[in-house]
Length: 197
Length: 197
Image (cartoon, rainbow over the protein chains, first blue to last red):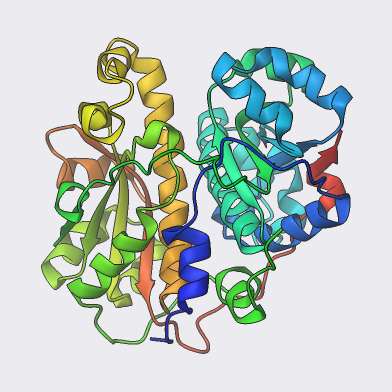
């Protein structure tokens, strides 16, 4: 085994990282969002299928389109966050298969012919990529606040009216304030969730 | 913003990390698997629900139960890997809500009364946790090979016969050999997957 990464890395990504409920008013420029994508894009997906899509909602106008779909408890912090990302999936992600997985020339047609398989693949891998986004943001010095308390149908109608993309979950990005965290929730013990066979 | 983590961290987790298709025969002890869980468990889930379950298949006997369910192309490398993790979801994860999210005393009953919401929550968050496992393994010096090419129903029948847990995907863990990687697949460009509004 390689040696583990140092404590700063383990703390930043997992051990000391926290979901934030309030953000400082420092904007996040497009250059940072591109850096974020250029890091998370290397995370693995099945057959390199990369079904996640990202709408970075950064402007006042964009926020005003998003706010009505959020559950009340998610509005203030999302209005405050410099960026709220809509992590979505492309239901026709397989149209890119000839480019992203050229070693399997039939992949596109096989997904097109099997909507259940395509949907499972889109949601599983699009969700993995959403997790990569959360952890990549932390690695780049941002705080993340993922949320699923919103009306997916409203977001889809407002942002993805042609029906091809579907919203999965949201992630606030910014620099959290010192008082913007809640007490840490209990984690299940190894014995409750794991087995070695 | 905090400064980003150093190049070693960014390379290890994302930029130079690769899916491996072959592994050295060095065993992974239970202490390392516990370390892995003690890192990934801090990753965020909705309402701290933690629906993922993990079967670490490490023994010859365990592997022989798993192999028949794998697609042919996944067998040799999974037999060789010191550990293959079955990342599963607990369909009744909400029974732990009183412990993991005590601030919402009705959470357990609300999930129990809404099977669609419970299922969405289990799969979305269980998949996020699977991604945390992949990246946490890399941070600890392991290589990971995630796979979805297997028969979920066969795995569920063999390992989760009471029907409560459902397999999501598999992850080989070990130290990859130098020739065990394939050429890196193309990633979609920012313009193809992202929008700033």
